Image 1 (tube, rainbow, N blue to C red):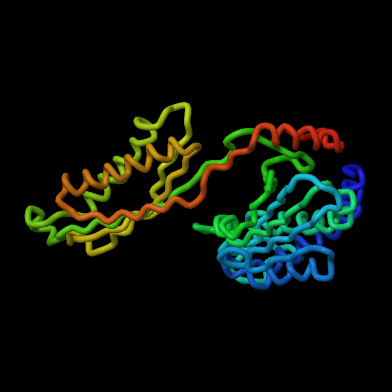
Image 2 (cartoon, rainbow, N blue to C red):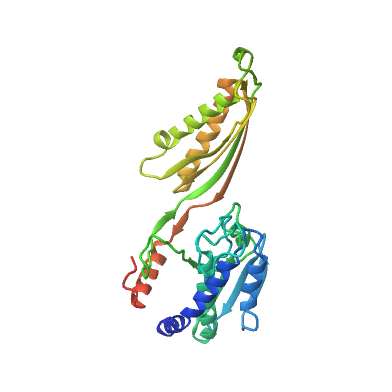
Length: 324
């Protein structure tokens, strides 16, 4: 079956390219992918499969391909939302939606999953078990669509799930894989510092929100270097510091936004604990009031070692000698 499937996919390469280019021309942002979802659903119209639309908190789609022989259930997943980026490159299939672009490859992900799904539908008589095709909306923004799709039961009874992502830095024609923890998890935070403020001529009568905020920015940089195990991976990034005001006025409030990235749950807990501890210390040290919003969104990606080895073996057996 593998050889037959590979031959079918090779014969439909042009179709995958055309689908990808259509999607590239018509990108939609997270939670606004109505037309893209309709296009995907229409692709399955008339085919002998179960199609569920509107899965999760947006436009998720789950397609169930039931093989004619008993076996396990495997899920294949791809995302289909775009990014708020203006496309500068002049190409025949340039984005028609100003300021929106498929800059992360989700158009390609969807194209190959659609054609692969159709090939599997045609081969369902040879399939042992069930294949679930998951088209995920809203991958780019937290909380994203994945969690809600899982909560809707899309993975109930699924024994394994597989996905793939394009990588521009990898040579064309190669497939990469990694066992174990492969991508970091992430959490978002926003800190609002409320002080008394005042005039620059009377600093002794005020509490300075900017000074307190600047101290926090510096302090959190010590978390990874002094609190995280050097064998683990962690990052704390400050992406926004909003303290605009008059040059001669001591600011009474500021907002800081950032995120953390972590390789595993233990590292996440260490960073989270330290951020909360530093916020409490900020209040005591500077006499300010702080409101911290902390929202974990994406967990780390963990690739099961046995399944990863199976994928690598299958790729090489199928003729891809450049899997690495």
